[in-house]
Image (tube, rainbow, N blue to C red; front, side, top):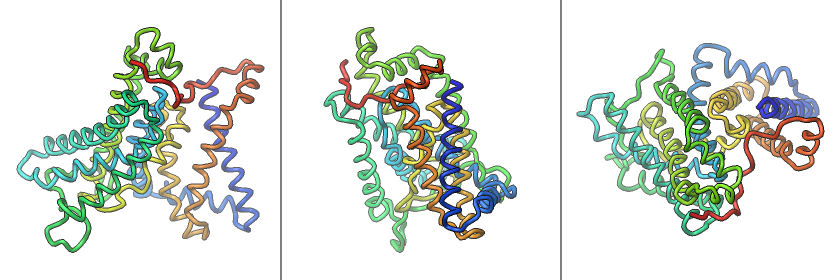
Length: 357
């Protein structure tokens, strides 16, 4: 566990040093860029709360990626599952005006979770029953979800005026509870924290969690000891989709209050970096998501103050992933073993393994 945490810290440090060297070569001040980034993310109360708001969908999607990866299932479709959940929540939201607010919010969350679960469950069924590589199916379902969203906001869910490609506003009773207004801090972060605690308990304190991790470590051995791999595969990807879909519902309920094209800026893909930095630990995902939320929130201030493109943040994320993957290569593993350092907390998902029942 200590080595896993240390790897994340070292990867972020190395990525920061590489970026600093590039900035110096371009004539920019690394200290100035770092200060502007921190100022934009934490410089005042509203910047801090906005960082938390930006981290919230990353917690939902990070948890979705984490539970799937823990079972050796490469779910690259959290973005599509989030969109599917948002569509489901946005579709019922305008019709909840007569409902009590707590029940209306719960209905939004349940609809979002169901939408995401269906989207993820389809890929789980394809993997379990047709041995379809989940990397391919989940990626392709992202594009399908984006096109379905485009069709709905141009068609059946389009606002009555037909002036803009967006859905009707959800009912006020379905608006998420807000904290410390006029900030955008909302109940969604509390739900995300509760789900993170629940996922941790599921993975590390239950029999089902043991089966998931056993499947992730060695699918053949898990099959030999009677773990129902096919059923677990479908259920795990459905659960993963439900987590991401609930995140989409929170965004509709708390932030946008309607659907529109390009609803997600890529939260599901950024969640892969969030989960890897956290070493698939659900509690660590909260901290990792806040880190990436701070990068996202501070990037615009960095551009204004230092003239550095916010794309730099995406470069940092990519470097962190590549460095973490490099730490898991066989050569590095042998070097760790020679010094008596423990193995990483989870094995890499085996995409080519058979999903025997």
